[in-house]
Image (cartoon, rainbow, N blue to C red; front, side, top):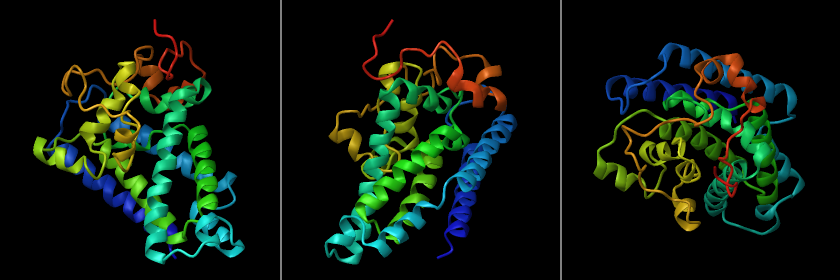
Length: 273
């Protein structure tokens, strides 16, 4: 299984496709320079990839292969048809990432890390790879645990990892979809208009639409919000307490964001000002 080649090829293909779409049919005008955004955000993505390879012992697919060899996890303890095991694992891993995302909004120290993603003053395909290294490492640990507990087949994990990466870039795209098509797509995948609400500067909108791949969890757990109050063209992207581009849009500032004050009142259930 050529995991790295498959994942890198899909990443580059989706990134370039979304970039072309944004160039020819953008939804909103960017407030920050596109070239600088690409350089900074792709630098963060590259740094994250290097750190993960250096710090963690294996990919999530490797964890799945180990679990299969050792007989760990539900799918390895009970006989499940291969196709069903793959489908159930992909959906279950997506649910785990939904829960992780909610947790990063609910626990203040985790929010301080996750706000690197939300402090972006614009919303485009590169926002989908803008995550602090601390968050990437923690997310990998969550995926290890979920994969081993499920006994997810390696194929399911590879499919999930490719989908998670691709849909993250898709649903962060600064692109416009026809309303009817967006409504239909929202039944099966998180769309850019659905996820853009999550990047609103208004806390009640930030704490909604947590899904990355599948929209079902937001409907099931009451975290779905259809549209931003101000509309997509007029809504403010980012965080109210972080509006200085020197902090939010430069590589050094982005990496230091978890340590900046004020830290705001965005975490779920925190008292609002």
